[in-house]
Length: 385
Image (tube, rainbow, N blue to C red; front, top):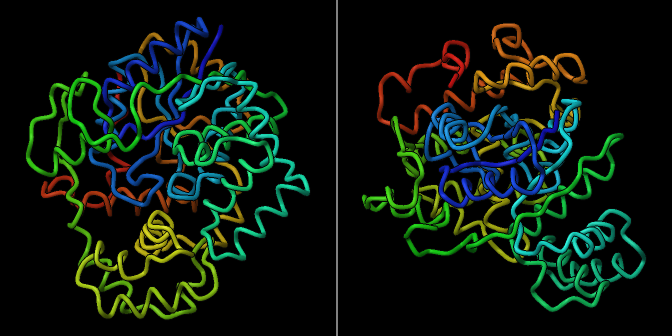
C-alpha cells in the first residue's frame, strides 16, 4: 500500500489544488492520498473562507481519500511550526511514504541544499543573518537574504512564499525517524496573483468573493454553506484587546518583547482589524506575524500550551472516502498517535479545547444562526463519500 500526504489550507479548494492532487498521484503512484488540512483559521491568522467540513468535502470529492485536521496549535503559527505540525502529523501516521508540496521550484537537490543550510545554520549563514537583523530587517527577510548569500543564489529567490514553506517541510521531514519521500510539484500560478480565471489563486478567489463576484470558473466544486466575513470579528477583537494587560499578551506564543505594548496602544486608536494591523506594522513586525498575534489573543492561545505539545498529539478525522477503510485500519495499527474519528473522547484535551474555541469563533464570523451556535466540533458528523 503506497500512501502520499499533502499539507494544505484549501482556502478555498481550487483547480490548482486539483492539479496538485492529480500530479501527486501520477508521480508517486500512490493508492491513497491523505490531506492534513487547517481547520477554522489559516496560517496567516485569518478565518478560513468556508467551513472546514465543507472544505474537506471538496478535497475528498476531488481526489483525497482522507482529510485530517491540522490542529490550530500548529496551523495558526509561523512557517517553522506550521511545517513541524503538518509533517509531524503525517509522519506519525506510520503509513505515509511520500510528502507532496507545491513550490515555485522543483529541483529537489537544490531545495535539499537550501533546507540543509536552514537546518544546520553554518557560520556564514549565522553571520549574514545577524547582520541583517542588526540593520533592522524583519526575521523572515534577514533569514532569506542570509540563505541566498550563503549559497550564492539570486537575490529575492527565497521570497517565494511556497518555497519558504517547502524548505520548512524538508527540514522537518529530514528529522523524522522514517522520512517521507519529498515530492515538489511546480506551481502553475503565483501565490499572490490577482487575476481571476480558470487557474486563479486562492487569494484572487477570496478577493472576488468579498467583492460579490462569481468564482465558479475557478473552482472544481462550488462553495457551499455560509462564508466567513473578514470584518465580522473586528469589534470582538478590539473589545478583547482593550480589556487585556501586557502580562496577558506576553503569555501568547512567540511574543517578542515590546510588541505587547504596541498592540495595546494601537488598539485604543484603531477602529478595525485592518487599521490596527496597519498601525502596528513596521520593519520589525510583518503583517502576517501581527495577524497571528491578534488571532492568538482571540483564541486565548498561550505559549505554555505550545511548549506542552511540541507535536500533534492526535490525528482528528474530518472526512474520508469509503474506499479508504483499509487505510484507516493501517493507521490504527501503525500510527504513533491516536486516530480520532469520534471527537467525544477528545472533549477534555487541551489542544481540542483550543480547536473548539477556534470553530466557535469562526462560526461567529458568519451570518448563519446554526453556525453561530457553540459546540459544533462535538456534533458535526464526519464527511463520508
